[in-house]
Length: 195
Length: 192
Image (cartoon, rainbow over the protein chains, first blue to last red):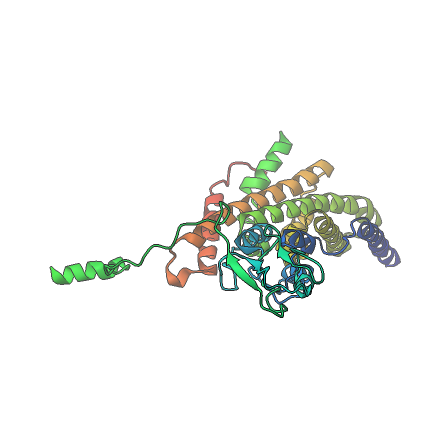
């Protein structure tokens, strides 16, 4: 009886030691999936996903709390990349798909207050106090965060011409002819009735 | 020759899932996508081979000399639980995505009756060390093959026009039954 208890206890202790060692050896720092998701996000920290920044959004996706289609600056390429990484089905962007646009500052009206510089999450606006500001077009993600703080409303959004990465066929025009029923059983039924 | 026979026997003729009906829980649970099925197959292969070997060692060098054969089941479950824990740590470290996708089914390998079944059958059939290892490995390969085949079929079924009453689990069960019938056709190929 005693050696039975001892044998099982010895086994349990041995496995406990092995597992304890491997828990140290294979310890995972942080959340590697959140890191991978974070690397795919555009890092604009614009908050349009309703999370305070890209990192919190990445953690929410990794935890399964947020969907992958809430990043307007990343647009469709980001949704596709995330779907590919996570093995989920890609979805259309949740925010209404608006045309890709960049902010442009009307330099005649700008008073050089620097408020838009502080608002810009990607540092795409250059300028100094009492100096005219301007937007670096390649850096601008079109997040519209600079429109609100401008006291003289001199920033407006200019739609971008589609380039080779986001060009697509326009939707077909609705056909003027009424389409036949898609259900072939109905179609056959009607044909039999008329015959 | 005998080793090859063990492999063929466990992979095809006495397939653990479709002929012996062991380990059906992950077979139905993680067969929705081929990638996850492959990952599950690899994890189970690792666990099965390792636990077959270590349970053989424990039975041969600890339980039998001490006359503790009646503790076999509990000792084997201890071995399997430890091996699964170890596998879980390794998968978490090496492939966090697979870890996420497998989710609860990774720790549930512990309760996969094929794992305990292999350990107990090894004792019952008085297999030696190499035979035990091959028996465990063959069972795992058979499990993986069947799991991957089944998930491939289920991916096609997901796109097929299944009659309404058969949608979901029902058609999966019917498919599993048909696959089992097909594997029954191997019986008599090897006599062990």
